[in-house]
Length: 69
Image: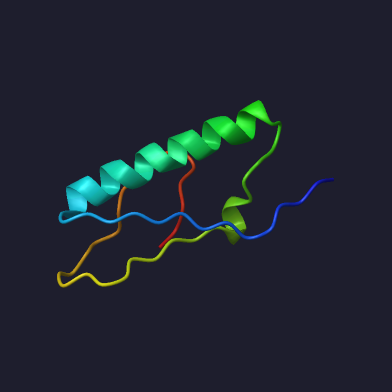
């Protein structure tokens, strides 16, 4: 088996909708790269957090792979 070290993805936006769109695009690109390289993402060990929001954010709707807040 092959294992990868920790990876971080970051983005910024002014709205929740824009944040959701940007993160989903990044996740899709990561997902496609993993598939092309015959790797998988351990969803049980994958999380995201939102830093610096002035407004209450409900859970983002992330597409595949689904990741918990």
